[in-house]
Amino acid sequence: MLKEYASSYKEKTVGFVGMGVSNLPVIRLFAKNGAICIVRDKNDLSERDFYPELVGLGVNFICGENYLDNINETLLFLSPAVRPDLTGVNKARENGTRVTSEMEEFFRLCPCKKIAVTGSDGKTTTTTLIAKLLEAQGYKVWLGGNIGVNLFATLDEITDKDYAVIELSSFQLMKLSESPDIAVVTNVAPNHLDWHTDMNEYVDAKKRIFEFQNSSSLLVLNLDDEYAEEFKCCAKGKVRTISGNTQKGDIYFTEEGIFENGTLLVNDNDIRIVGRHNRYNYSAAYSAVKDLVSVETLNKVASEFGGVEHRIEFVRELDGVKYYNSSIDSSPSRTSACVNSFKTPIIAICGGYDKNIPYDPLGELFKKKVKYTVLCGATAKKIADVFDSVGYTEYVITDNFENAIKLAKEKAVSGDNVVLTPASASFDMFKNFAIRGNTFKNIVNSL
Image (cartoon, rainbow, N blue to C red; front, side, top):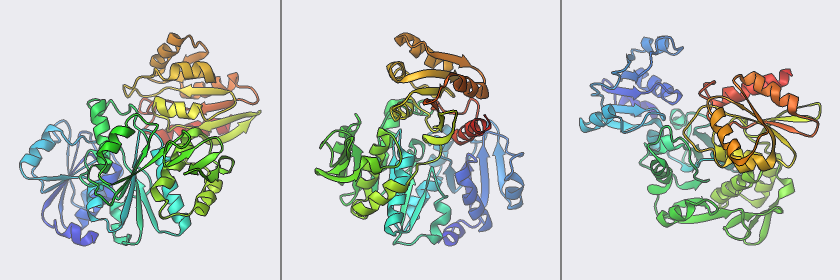
């Protein structure tokens, strides 16, 4: 399939805006099958590892401030982080260029059923759980999107009997004109407001996950989220709901476990990963695949699955203090979920790149539940101002990440938990949240 698809553009010009990881295998595919490839990026790419290889394949590079000038390509791929309404991109559309993305092309060509998850929090764990449940039931699963493999590059291996399980960000959804067979929205909270024009645009992007569904599609919604009712009214197919309130959703959970119509599906004590937010994740995941997966399989996965890296990931215990890496917590709502997962005292490490998100929700929560906080990074002062406004004084600010960990260690006593839960993105100090989390783990393991 892929060779025939790429060969249809032989001797035609195919452009790529933004040299993201997702575009690299797509560029190789087109270049090796005779297309004239152009990479357009604001940054100088000549020192990047892939540059010599792509030049050897005949790929042209247009970099710098004017990288979007005079686009006349037949086909133009946008990286996830590239806005689809840039002036140069809009002019290209007007001139007849077909503008697409790696994920858009995957949705268009994929032969199997697609299950996709979006949300401000919990989408990676929920997506992973869906894949685990299907795999444990015996299905062949392709996991991708923001996580897993490049799905477009694996199209030749996917059959119509498989399932594609996809995590979708708001960036990706803004470029999609197709929806999955099964869509899950975990929740919607302020996020990425440094990229989106406003909260309305962010919400509209999330809605696109079900906007193109039909009457045979399924949408899973969290009734405890303020946007769920609005989304429910817009659904094109069947809606299945979840909740953390007794008998409010089709599938709901209590301190006892996860239920459906009053029947206990899985005992809470049998779920290996901690946290109320993970009960939402399990409820959403099972709601998406309950027609395909048995309750026995649900219990098997619940007892074995230890969680996703960088999400309240246990690192080590030292002198009776447990250290956890939750570097994925790039928003206040994620950090709130993390903090609420612990029943013993927390020493929190917070702060990072500023995405223009309000930190007010952290004030009263930290005052009530966090023993001490070490603030570090660009948002440290912003978070501190929130703490001051509610009279929470148990914090310190440092400008050094390693020192933040050492300060947390000094404050912790046996029985405490030191938790990296930044409530902010990583880009002020680290390339991504994974590098931040791995740095945290390396430092903690060297203590």
